[in-house]
Length: 467
Image (cartoon, rainbow, N blue to C red; front, side):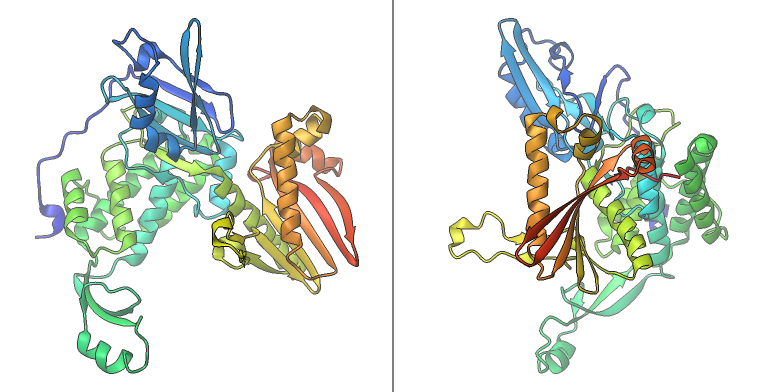
């Protein structure tokens, strides 16, 4: 009997009452006031000491979205506010009175959903939203485009189909970390004498193609295709994902579609510790769709909790742009996230190790010219153009100055006669097009030190495709 044949009784899906509110803002946006009469229902004392309990209950959710709490008190009472950070996402909020989910918090991307979708599409969904192991978020489904969940699900299903093998089988493999049963005789006779102590021969079971798993994949793809097709004409990202779903359905067209049971998916994940990571992640994604959590157009208004670090998304987008440009110029490129631009800092006293290394995002080299690039998900460049330096707030000016100092420190790491140090900031599409037309999408200054010349460049790129 296959794993999906077990447990014929479906676990009931618990849905939150629709009366629970959803509070929203944009990343780095205006604070959100949390009403005491909603989250403290039944209490007459206002936030007061309950603010600490609220923070304790919701710490994991708040940290995941990079938001801060601020409690303001005056003669009329106290007010608790959420200060958005640099992440988009949705999380549930628990009441400090009951401990139950009483509301939802949604942080939208300030450059709009379209820009996020286009960047995710251009970067291959490598920085896709991270789905969180938290209760569902009240009221979030109608506020979030379907592809926020559908994109990661399709990506996981594509990886699952690539990893599946035919039937259950035992795999013999050489691993740096032991898995399953270690083949001690081979390890002692072949690897130890060579000094290859980190080459451990192992034998472990691996899950191959289970026909019912493939039927579950097809059912999930059909469900996603149907939901995305309904809005495809109005949403270019949804249209692209529809095409991906059709492509994946071609790979499983030889099996019939069958909706899996949630209990069975949970059992497979719980009882098969040697599942390949791609298969485990794929089955989890199937479970999200089976339980109808968070896909736009479903009967429930509650969606999955998720988080997306927009700074990471922006860095990957800038990397993709410079990779494309380097192919045209012939420059070589090194990438910080891959550990290719790390410069260790060796402190003489161990207690002074406030910073252990410098890691520029990108380093491009063409001949003797060095180009250092650091992507910054901030609005400084937009502010410089639209309001001017004089109207910068003190904290904005200080943050911008810190960015400049940082990229110039990176430039000082290289022994070259000429180094270009670039800070890349996000712009709205309309602003980028207007600046490009006037030739003002870049601002360049030159610094001289001895025989060295450093060009400091501030560059704006659109958050998302300009097409």
